[in-house]
Image (tube, rainbow, N blue to C red; front, side):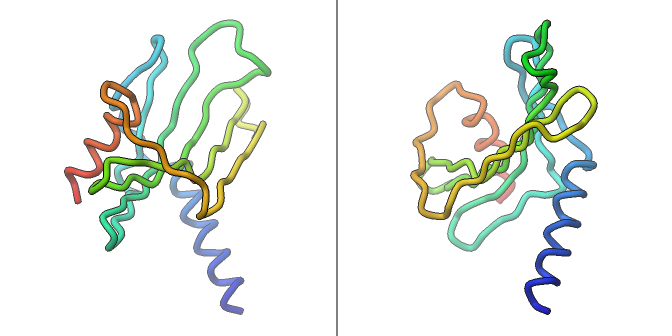
Length: 127
């Protein structure tokens, strides 16, 4: 029963994230990059979980690809991040690919001047 409740809550969270109010914070090759400020999770261990949406405006689109929604965990104290999951969607909002990492996957240092660095600066200031 507990597992079912967790699955329902996770489903509500993911649906809310997919439909949330995305705020543009950057762009790459004329393609906008957004984050969802309503679904930032601040953990007690100086880490922050946040969703990013990257839209592809290039033509032609590979595999009818439109955008990806990426869940990050940022370690604000050590200036590192880990990608938790990636969901890629087509222009008609069909799921094309999904990837998930395990809790034991490696973390990466934040490089200056990167989109992940910009997002970390935004969410870590809110903490």
